[in-house]
Amino acid sequence: MKNLILATVAMMVLATPVGAQTTPHEAKAREIYARIIGFRTAAGHDQTSVMIDYLADVLKNGGVSTADIATIEEGEATAMLVRVSGRGHGRPILFSAHMDVVDARPEEWERDPFTLIEENGAFYGRGATDNKAGVTALVSTILRLKAEEMRPSRDLVFAFVGDEETTMASTRRIAAHPWVKDAEFSINTDAGGGVLDDETGRPLIYLVQGAEKTYATFDLTVTNAGGHSSRPRSDNAIYRLARAVLKVEAHRFPVMSNDLTRAYLGAVGQVQSGAVGEALRRFAADPSDVAAAETLATSPEFIGRTRTTCVATMLDAGHAENALPQTAKAAINCRIFPDVAVETVRDALAAAIADPEVKITTRDEPQASPVSEMRPDVMAAIARAVRAKHPGVPVVPYLESGGTDGKVYRMAGIPTFASSGLFTKPSEMYAHGLNERLPVAAFYEGLDHVYRLAVELGEVRGGG
Ligand SMILES: [Zn+2]
Image (tube, rainbow, N blue to C red; front, side, top):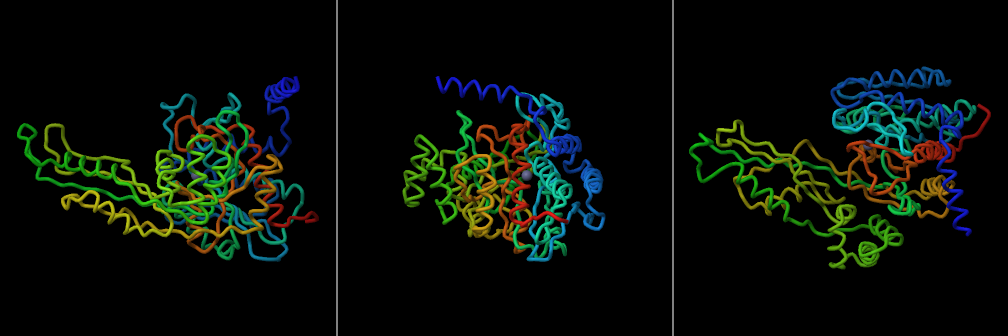
């Protein structure tokens, strides 16, 4: 009976249109979110500086002075910094979000990716999650601090990055900017967040990103004299490359762990059921447990937390349908465990392929970033912000398997903790993919999360 009443109440809450309950700052944030999803800020579309102009206008109308807005337009870098001046007690705190998105082809989506659409309890649009919800949360926080005439004890600097998904040149510029270079730490909204149980929707755990794997791509290239396709020869660049790629598929890198990953895997194990949950608990207690590591290796969610991974992501071969291939190439994308050198992984791939005719080259100049030691003050502030909405949820650090520009800040000496306020289900991870969406409730919680962190970490007080 009691459960029935609770279920009825829950349905009533769900049935209430969210728009009807929003506060003025939430309504304003939704308007900003809709506008910025309309900018196709993917590489090559030249919309990022247009978006900066829009955001700068919104901020100026909200009381931010021109002197506290800095735009960066140098080479590939396009970014904006906004400063909320403090009372001079301590080094600045940086908050970061990125404005650019992975491109989306409207013809492949069910809805226009560059129009914000609220449907089925979610906001749809490219960047809805990654990372325009974060951009909106930063802008909303600044507007609230200004409207409430609040002032932090030290400078809060808000960074809007223009190319996180590509070169991260603007993140490097930001890290060296006079407002930022002495920052004590940064909060990145581009990762970190809560995990909801896939079936029940119950909040399970909240994760703070404290380190990232190193991102590296190796190109495999096979060349051949080629010839007419009516005269096949015994050696063929495509077949040779294919054999090498299959060797990469079969190769397993050694199992690894550190304090951060053990804390994370152990905490996730406490809330995860089934064979994977048991493997997590056993691995956290004893990382030499081979059977537990094997079970985790079968999970796309956990394989990357326990070892380096490499996977074939692109192929390019041949030049005509009636010619033998002269060149065949494959891109192998690797996510390297912290403290493992890029060269070591390249050597391991070469040994696995064991074919000197397959040339291996390292793309760009991959660099490893340090682990950010968890600060008790930051973790406590994040835990309070999270538990204001989700009481009792464990707050745990984790190692990022993907990649964010947090590593650029860490390499520049700014410890970085990624913490969005977004709670989502693992089965609903749509970043970079088709029909990207974010639960409506998560969007509004994300606004409040960043605001709470700014107020608490910045020791924000009233009175101008
Ligand atoms: Zn992102």
